[in-house]
Image 1 (cartoon, rainbow, N blue to C red):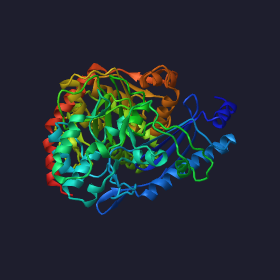
Image 2 (image 1 turned 60 degrees about the horizontal axis):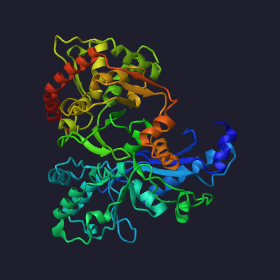
Image 3 (image 1 turned 120 degrees about the horizontal axis):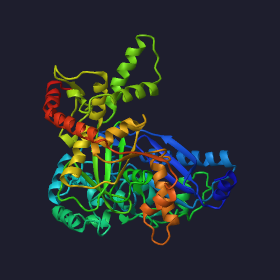
Image 4 (image 1 turned 90 degrees about the vertical axis):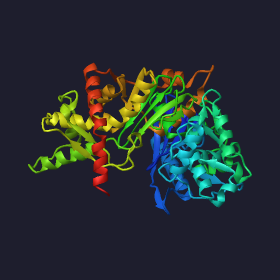
Length: 534
């Protein structure tokens, strides 16, 4: 859009705002009618460990929100000479899961417990068994049940159980609601009814009946909304909370608050059945939209939903590129011994491309990238490890290919449950994150791991903040019952360039050979953990 058209959109309230609370950054993104970013603002923050709990204070939350909004509004004024007084629609997103418990006066009764806390092992195991459904430790219901098992006094006074995104939305609109994707990280969802699973709600109430709390679980969870539904309007008090300058008007509609998983799906056009996305950086996770529920529970697979409520199988791994990066750093240090100052991007590119010359099965080499534990393979701790037989083909190409395979090996183990045991069908997968920066390399490795075509987009906008802005735009512009998938396909990504790479059968066979050897060597990794205590 031309600058004059953008200025008119700003004045007339046809823009859309998305704000996402990430683990280390709060980002605000304003988009135009073409879904392109026209202004942004960000605020860096960090969680802190207090009394054994990873948390952010309420002051952290509101200071960060107001700062990111103010910087975005200043960007609008600097670029276009316009004051931001109204917006067509707003959406809020945040890291999923966690625990925020409020009393009837709206007071937070215990420190916000983020997804990062691993203090609910007993509760998660008990609920998984009771529900016959995998409940990860980070889920809100696991935190609630652990608080019950701990006998925490505040539990009997809970009026509202919230996540971070739902809390922000509630404070600005007065509505206690959650987007269905966000809700699916609080309590299991029934994708047929687009609501919490009724049978599991009853089981939970029965499980805690002896406590005689004055609430039922249905009473304290946020109401579930799907993408496209109106989730309330910005109240006068909410407008002042968001924009401390007082310029922003009340009455702006908001879409349902969503989690970072849902915004990632929207930002990569991965919301339709038989599509998926893989985010690969320090950690790696894959999300595959299913045509139907899985046949049984798998502890390696988390079940969540798209923002429209379709079931999504998620494989989440704690380790991805950290060990790979450490080896690249070693090669950088080696080069410096000869006075060579290699450009970092060129160094990664050279070593990644060298890996493409290696044997398809890595020549008998094996590496484990476990800087920390990996629940998918049953490790509570990890030790980075490289092993080979005396007769292995120990070349630089095989060495680098091994570490690229290793970065996705645990993910492949989880995904093979879906692809080989459950016969899940995938038409398209979008890769995003640092692993895919070197053109064609990470993409081809992932294609081999999944035996599926992998696309890498020219741009994914502004990530999660852009994704929640797209969901707000969908609510604002939805007509004639168009689905979220159709909206993204036809109105957002129609002209966006992407490069797609199909799997090479030889690469697929080679990765399968490698992963068989990798799984046989898990006992070596176990021995390393036991023999090298922290």
